[in-house]
Image 1: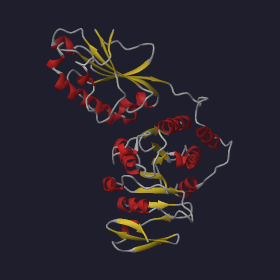
Image 2: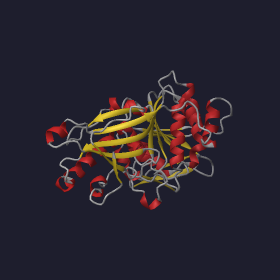
Image 3: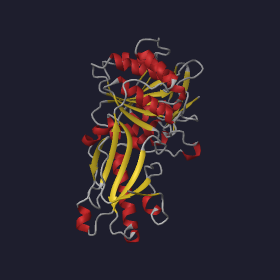
Image 4: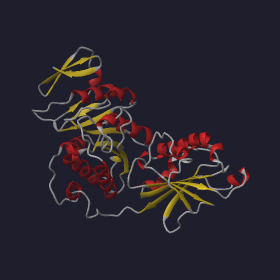
Length: 376
């Protein structure tokens, strides 16, 4: 096996301008790719000189486990790189995009090793076609308990869920309990930045108490960009969005830990709309979209709200006499035909508010102007 640590002649091929960037990969040459049979892995065939969509049915083989390594395997044929560099650069990008469409959580993470593997034992196209081309995803079991290095905040969340500590804030719990007869099969999109850690426990606690009911089916956590600098955050492409299946509470908590480790938000606005769009686009079989939002943060990508094609039920955390309902979330609820929910009340029918009309919520007045609510 021969490792090519970014020879100048090969670097343009290996590093296309990826829509879903991976950490800088190691480039490896070997006669024929052989998977490491001492580890668990999933092979996703793409075909010679092809890029195929990856069915959701195949993704469960790794989404329920911890991914440690991804190998993108192809052939060095013809041997002269200049003969196929341009076309293959586009092909590799298309393959990466297919994997990103299947599971965007594999990208932009420092805990996953990426290898680009070129197979060299082929003297003709016919021989090249006989070799494997595609992704090999290595996985390991997710441990049932947290590691000693886990965040103290996550240990506190776990203690609340297990009943060892009392709930600090019951906003989300109260709203979910109040609406559980109306909201079934939920996709919950949760702001999991620093300001929201105190509220997340109530959601997971409610979920743990309602596992046998048609409650929360899917979680999407977002941290507004995985510690990305503010000047690099682009509306709709900020990132830091993670999905979690909800069958096992430990899996949910571990995913929350991962999201926390990868980013804390940093600045005020959050990428709520991008997270919602990611959830409704890549997850199937749900009825209600629930957003657990920080009332004290604005929505970074509110201008994209018109792309959401279903009502969003927004549970607002942090509403009090000093912090009235944030105008951005009123607008988001109105644009999507959804609703606002605080610990005290459910605010519905916002879509019926006419342009220029004024409404009052908890003593604060708002006027609809240009399609957006504004505090008066």
